[in-house]
Length: 169
Length: 284
Image 1 (spheres, rainbow over the protein chains, first blue to last red):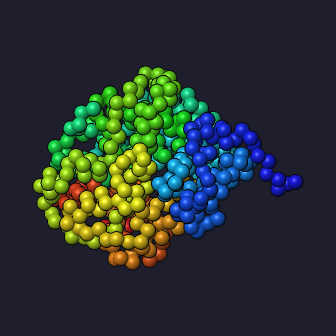
Image 2 (image 1 turned 120 degrees about the vertical axis):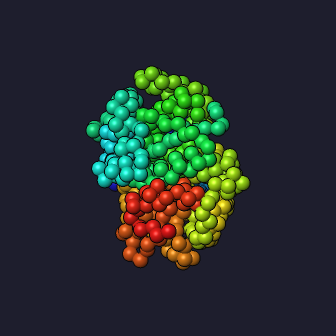
Image 3 (image 1 turned 45 degrees about the horizontal axis):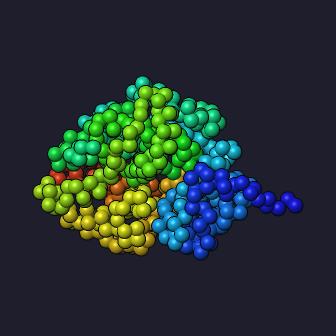
């Protein structure tokens, strides 16, 4: 029975409750799969992912690589004849995967950068020099170089439990 | 909110990787008579592909904090990046449509003494140029006619999802092509023009090789029509095309953000376009 896929009857409802209200509307036409640039060159099938979600195949979906193949380009959403919010549903399932601890190390790095600086990319000295040579401020007027603003940014992240979620700073 | 001015939202990639995009935007809007307000203390939008995929509640609260900063200044937000536009527009839409959600987010914002009223509009600079400024006013500012053949890359989060953005046709958009053609340049059609660059959705950071396979498809199609430049309206697509070509032998198409192209057409000196930050050398 190692390959048995046991449905979780509450899974589809948990997606709907989290905001994926259109999940049930999918009638499996496959327009999403046909429109998906990720599916062109890989075995990723959007229609299959949505069907699995409807069936409650949580243990199949949450640890899967497939869940992270979507570039959120919305080609499927634009063409879906049932107005299923496919990208939103994929994002909600990604949130559930992260809560279960399924998160790539490179993604944790992005999360840590956000916590540290308020930005997803770091500022290099070379870049700062270029900014100054162009007549821009050394740091952009953001959380960089503004400790009070960064502290507020981090306070919000603490309140939502982000640090714990990505496995600590 | 005041229609004659904007709060400039910088995001991450423009100010920290391609400052020429920031500089050209500032000069462009100054030249048009706008006095852009600084969003002092703003952070990442946060990124729609990575951060929203990790935790939508955190994404929404941090986006709301950015919206509050603009609301306090009494201005709508001007974005220069499809990712920032995507995140802030969608977060704003969710908060404006759902009073319960807004209440929940405001409980989090109370921690930092903020409250979002839901009054801000989130705009993309390209649609502001197209809709608010218009061709007549814009053409008066152009001093240097350009005659490049370029490949326009829309990027996904510019007009999609169209059901909330209402900017352009999802299958055959025209806005950016027209904006490019106002300068005298020609937007050359190419296969799979509306395809994603590959970077979004956390794909670039998780599997850069897979992201690059999208980029290569697009570059192959752009090369086939002899595009001199790639014109984008998103620093993240910009980065994907510009840095991506380092790892793709046989491609060296320079990448220019629309703000930089407009800066050029308005006669800004090359030093204000920050072209030295580009991996693929831009020869004008």
